[in-house]
Every structure is written in C-alpha cells, then in structure tokens.
Length: 314
Image (cartoon, rainbow, N blue to C red; front, side, top):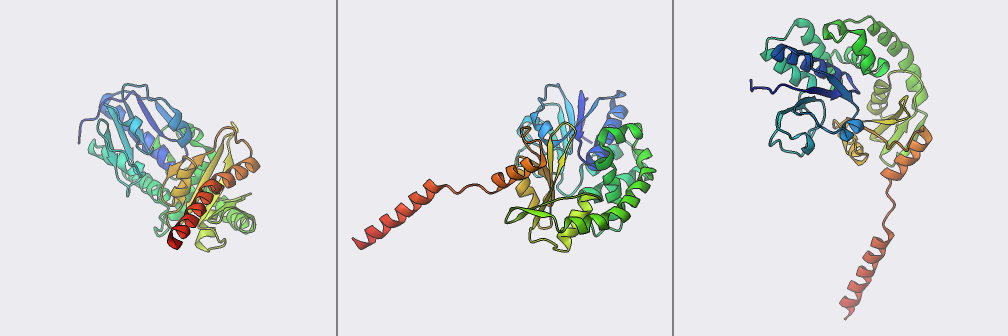
C-alpha cells in the first residue's frame, strides 16, 4: 500500500449510496491510520464544482477527477471518466469498480473488513453500476433508495455513521413495500406522461414508486421512443436536479451538455440556480438540448456552395 497523507477533510458524493458507503469507509480508514475523527463533507456534483479546495490535504471519493484536485497531499478514489492526468495527487481510478469498492480495497489492506462490510459494498456496487443481471439487483436498488428517499445526512444520523447498521435496516421493509405497491402504479402512470425534450431525450413525469426502477423498466421495455430518459427533482432549497438514464451509453453525453457527469447509463446534473421550478426546467432543457441552428453559418455555407458552382462554370 502506498503511503497516504493525513487528510484535513474527506469529501464524497451526496446523491447516492456509493458516495455514502465510500465516504464512511474512508472516514474509518483515516481513524485507523491517524487516530483522528476526520470531518466528512458531502456534495452534489454542481456544488462540488463550486467548492474551493483550500485545505492542505484531503481525500476525495466518488467525484470525477479534474485538474483542481491535482494537488500535493490529495488523494482521489473514483470510477468516473476523466481526461485529467494525475501529476501531484494520488489517483486511484478504475472505471469498472465503484468508489465504495475502491475505498474498501484500501481498508482491507489495513485489516478493516468483515462479512457485513463485504455485503454492503457488494450491494453498493451492484446498485451504482445498475447490474440488473446480478440476483441482488432489486435488493441493491432498495438499499440505494434509502439514500434517495431519506437523504444522505438523515441516513447517516440514523445509523450513527456506522455502516454495519445499514445492513438489514428496518427501513428496507418500507422500501420493499413501496416497490411492490407503488412501482406498478407509477409505471402505468408515467409511461403515458413522457414529454419530448429533444428527438432523443424524454422527460418522465412521476408520482409514486422507485423512480430509477420505473425509468429502467421504461427503457427495458422500450415504452417510449427515446433512448435517454430523464427525471426532475426539486430540492428544498429550490435547486433542480436532473437524473438521466439510458441503456447504450447516451446518458453521460447528455449530462455533460448540462455540466454534469456520472456513468455511461446513469448520470445527472444540477440546473442553474435561476431555474427553480419544474416547468422552467423543462423549457431550459429544451432550449439547451436543442440548440438553434446558426443561420449565419448556413448562409455562409450556401454562399460557398454557389461560389463553387460559379467557379465550375468558369
């Protein structure tokens, strides 16, 4: 194991189970290595991009590596695509492993492991990569729903920051009942309420159920003509979050157009703070994902074509 610098801060992704599991694992690793309770912070992608990295050192997990993280005594563990090469920071990067797996592998080198942690990390990995072929996929989705429904910090408080308390948590019964009862209702309602954003992107309206599983079913059964489906969520502070799903790698391309990121088939973005209502978000997305053709460029192209014809005549 390479020597790890002592972190002043640990930062992780606030939006999903992978970020929660990875962040808590790093917090435990720091405690084992340095006998200190290092502060943990969590961010959505847009807020993270706006955060100044003023600390002397830090450990970052489940956030796409970029040039501003390439600092001496900073460690980044991630699995999102990146075009940035680490020259100063320590980068642990693997597109085929979730952040929770990467962090757990470091923990295991320090003797931090158990059958319970094995299980939680496995479920986190299945949910994050949407591994529908794995028998645990539905259960893993229920675990992921805990973070979506109850939010990162509420769940953190409920388990007292102890990952082991997440396994077989009583709230999973709530997730299972919601899935069995709400998902069929939500699917039937949503499949007739898909608004076209662009010829390849549809916005799914939802009322009940596990949104991710409903969208997954819409894509799997090809219930809409759109290869990319998105849902919108308005946070308490008015910020609008866009969640994107696809089956053939198109979701990440759309997310990047919105200054977001994620995985090939599961990505997301935060809209500008000026967009605070769902109808406005739909209008913004239609405008952003359907750029107005450059008429000047078209005219110039026509002029060039006519000029070429004249030259041929001469």
